[in-house]
Image (cartoon, rainbow, N blue to C red):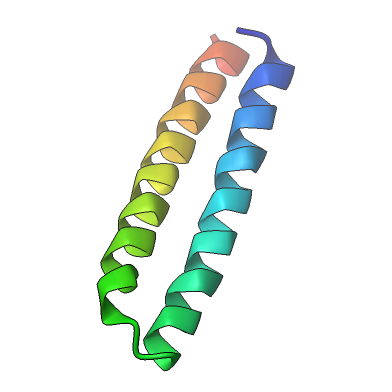
Length: 63
């Protein structure tokens, strides 16, 4: 994959993570507790994808 492709995936997953964090906070204050777990799970999965994409980019960049 190209370096540009890695950066696109990283930025998209960060955007998803920010939106899910905002929706989690709104759900908490709106007392919609059943949605908190859904949004938190999506955010954690997005963070994991972002982290592993970063590791692959770093390996590709510096090897």
